[in-house]
Amino acid sequence: MTDIRETLRSQPLRIGVSTLALFNLEEEHAVLESQGGEAYSKLQLEQEGTLIGKGPGYEVAERLLRLNEPDQKPWVEVFLLSRNSLDLSLRTFNSIDHYGSA
Image (cartoon, rainbow, N blue to C red):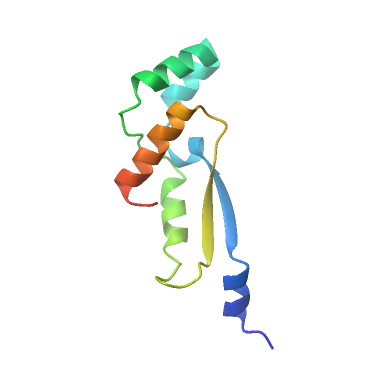
């Protein structure tokens, strides 16, 4: 009989999280909705070096990732899902790096 831990490690729980859930992007999203993609992209370029605040899903993702054990196959994998521009992607990765949850 296969040990349940082996099964979980061979088929970890995979969760996709949007950047909008992971980070506080309400201002940016409001610009996108009210002014369109061009204004949104301009705002992202202007804020490229600005970290994004944690959103409602950030703590959930952190807690799930803490289930993993060092030097072991993960129990949980969290994937970032985004249809955003490269500018927002750079801000996102810089913010993740800053918060220490890569």
